[in-house]
Amino acid sequence: MTRDQKMYDDSFLYEAFMTRAFRTGRDPKRGFDNGEFRVLEHIENGHLKNGNYQKQMLKLKKLIAKAVGKVLKWKLTAIENADVLRFAAMTERSIDGDDLAVALNGLLDATHRLKEG
Image (cartoon, helix red, strand yellow):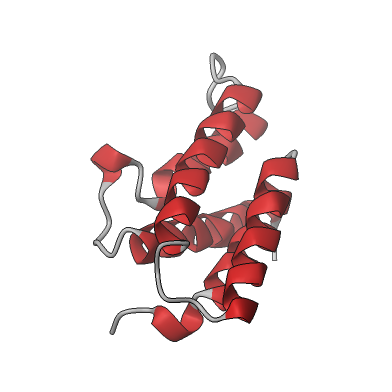
């Protein structure tokens, strides 16, 4: 798998968690789509010359933190709650898209029982 393909796949982890947390569909206006995550890839690859990687990372972290706040209001088991908190902390410590993807995958696993559909 190429780096571009991995980043593209990782972008859907972000979209899946955001739409699950807010119990909504894809919503680009609110940042609940893979495009927000893909901006990191475009900056990294030089496709966005005026893009700021750290600024985009901070934006994603804030959006994910807001989603985690929503999830923590759900009726989680003690284990699910601990996992959500652990992966939320991992999100905060993330320095790149790969780190965020690992944390998002963990958040999706922790909330799997409560997914809609």
